[in-house]
Every structure is written in structure tokens, then in C-alpha cells.
Length: 432
Image (cartoon, rainbow, N blue to C red; front, side, top):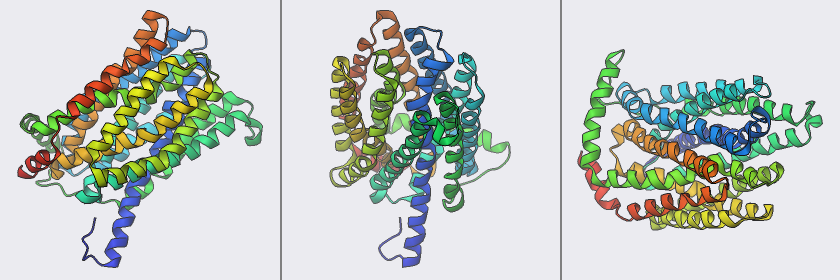
């Protein structure tokens, strides 16, 4: 952000830059809400794979999520390094966003029973969504000063909850009252919803493209040389991550606890369906999470500014531990609503404060590459979490046991996070 001596004009320009950056979260959170958490798992289970058993569809949904995450694990660090050296973070972001947008819109054309085609398009859309976030996160250090990292990061997640929730509410109305929109039935409402997500994502990505500048790239190279330079830098960064003890400790902690968070996001609706809750009740629960998450993310940003991001992350992990235990015992839809409120209170907070804490521990000029590692470990965790839940459900025949596996991830992540010394990490990053 600008200094205290900055002119009013430059202050306005900075605010426009921050809001334009944060609006990308408004844009792509429609995919996270309507597709990942909402309609895709329901439609996959009840329409595209209607002939399969509950446990089989859970396994294949988990496998699709895990395959996309595995591919991101392999791609994230080299892509981040190449984008850093070529000054191409925005171009990479919008290129992967385009992949996600096109594949999401293409879900409209998948017919009943074609679960394999639906899964393939979903994997490609999820790759576009996840890979784009590497470069979106990397742009944070260019739009906010260190003092404002927590609140700016939280603003992105807050707008994401609000924007994703508003479109999701419209999409829910399209499925509950398809006649209002000239649609034949609820199934057509879901299919058209995938198109609305693609259009929303594309439209609200425009401010970032127009008003967020590409951060400067020291010793920028072009053409094929950027690939060689990026891979050379990547090898150096592997050595730096080993030397930056605090970064390594944080990444290991993040790897564990964000596994639990992402697994809840990807598998919560499927878990509720497996327990026999009505799909309509689960959709209401998702809407509750979105609109609770909007103010809660901002509140966590303020908490991070006052008490430090690590404290806020500990609070969120503690709530997730309670959620996992209570999730095993729930019997009624109203209890799922209470869980949705609890998740909404902490989900955006743990995500935004993790991003802002990590941004403090890394050298700003290599943000794309270091955020490549950040997203790599987040997605590598998501390789294991959904498959773990699906496998436990399949092996035991009881989905309730699967949610308890998340306790290991949350408790282990909290124990490792306790070893992260933020002050030492900032000193070491500044010395590079």
C-alpha cells in the first residue's frame, strides 16, 4: 500500500488496485461454491452416476478431486518459477482461469449417466481454478504492504464468500423454481448453473486484468529461455526452502491442516448425502456457510492485524477439531446447519491468514515460485484427504468413520504450527 505521505490520488489508485485484485476471488469463488461444494457432487451422485452405489460414487468423486490435485502438485513449483522469471504471473493466472471457465461451461453438455465425461471436465476445470490461484496469491505482495497483508488477504476471501454466495443463491432458485427462468426442470437448472458460473468467473476477472500491474521481474528473460531460467531458479529455491527453516516448518504445518480444510470443502455435501440428508438441506447449509463467511473472513483479518495471523489460525484449527468430532455424531439436518455456521466462521479465516502469514516469510521477488510451493503442498494434501474419506467409507461401509480421519490432520498441523517463529522467518526472508 502507499505510505502515509502519499497523495490522495495515489491512495485512490492503490485502493482500486486492492479491490480489483480481491474481485478475482469474487469471480472464481462461484466455481468453488456452485461447482465444487454444491451442485457437482450432488449431480454426480444423483444424475451422472445414478446407477452406481453411494460408496462407489463417493470413491470416484474423491478420485477426481485427488487426480486434479496431484497434477497441480507436479505443475505448481515450475510454473511459479517460470512466471517469476518471465514476469508473467497475470498471464498465467488468466490462462488457467480461461481453462477453468471453458471446462465449467462445457459441463452443460454432459448427459445423464456420462459420469466419466463429467469427471474429466471437472478435473480440467479444477486444474484451471487451482493453478490460477497460484498466481493470484503471488500478486498479493504487489498490492499490499506488509502491514496490510492480513486485511487485504481477508478482503479477497470475504468478497469470495459474498460473490460466490450470491450466485449460488440464484443457482439454487433456478433448481427449486425452474419455471421462473424458463427451464424445463431442476436438472436443466443445474446444467444452466454451470454456464452462469463460467460467465460470472469471466466477467469479474476483468478488473484484475485492467488495474492490477504485473510485479517487476528482476533479470527478466523471454521466449524459451524463460523455461530454462525458471527451472534453474526452481533448483535454487529448493535449496533456499531447506535453508529457510521457518518456511519449511510452516509449509509442513499448512500441508496437514489445510488438507482437513480442503477435504471438508470438497466432501461435505457428499458426506451429508451419504448420511441420508436431503439434498435441499445440504444446499441451504452451503448458503449459510457462504453468508456467515463474508463478515467472518474480515473479522479474522482484523484479528490477524491485532494478535498475529498464527493466533487466528490456531483458533480456526480448534474449531475444525470440534467440527470433525461433532460431524461423527450428527443425526438431523438442523445439526448440519449448525456445522455450516461453524465452518463459515473459520473457513475464510484459516485460508486468508495462512496466505498472509506465508507472504511475510518469503522473498517478495520470488512470490510466484514460493506460492507455487504453497499451493503445491495444499493440493498434495488434497490428494490424500478426499481419497482417505472415500476409502474409509468404502472399506467400513459407514461414512461416519471417515470424518474422524480429519482429526489427525488438524492436530498434527497445529503441533507443527506451534514451531513456526514468525519473527525469525521475516528476518531470514529479508536476508536473501
